Image 1: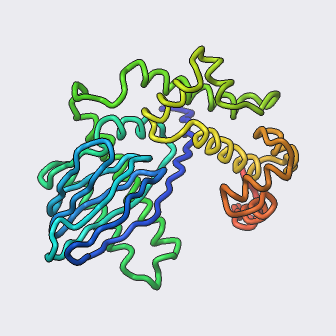
Image 2 (image 1 turned 90 degrees about the horizontal axis):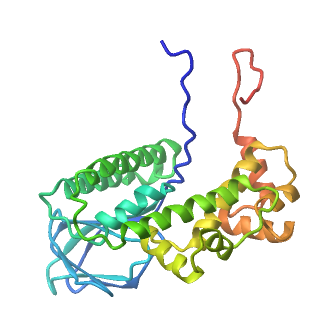
Length: 303
């Protein structure tokens, strides 16, 4: 029998927005847009044309599914001038860079017909989320939101398993060399943000010099592999570190500002509010107020 089992540290950073089910009239269309997140779409009735700037359009029929990659310009419209169409969609993002890269390389911006496991999984997932969201009175309650998160997490787990069955000989949008460079950049950024408190201020050029590549090449490769810019990823990693320090450390806000590479406390406060909607002090007070872990003797503790 094992005397010690280590439980992994988990930072899923799950984020979803703009999800809905919508029945539209004939000739409906939506203007060109792009997002910093994935967009999952499933048509349940009628046909939808989704057009991209740099590749052929797809015609989605009932049960067909599509995941649109972050940063992809696209427009959606009803294929019929007269018949109604119903679709479900959800924008979502998460922290795991490797799954993100596999999704972009293997399944993003590709039409999956209704009979495929991917389309069936996607339709079942969005249907569950729509059902959980029907009761507007309780839509924002904790239980409802957690149940929706559970459905999306299960979807990502099952999606990852399905991607394991995809033939890797299919054309990938990036080479093995580019995938390795992308991973090297991720690890270098994570190391700078999390392990270098002596010199926390850095930029992407510093990362590229460390890896002996040009900044322009590094930027292009990173965006191709992960669908987001390196600056966006650096900001996200610094935000995660700032959250952890505000929640669990005894450091002052000024010390935390230095540890995430901000020039001064004012710059840090403005940036953190842009990230979270709260000032650092407001965020810390909110976390302390919410955290109430108690023992049997009603003595507060946190381990």
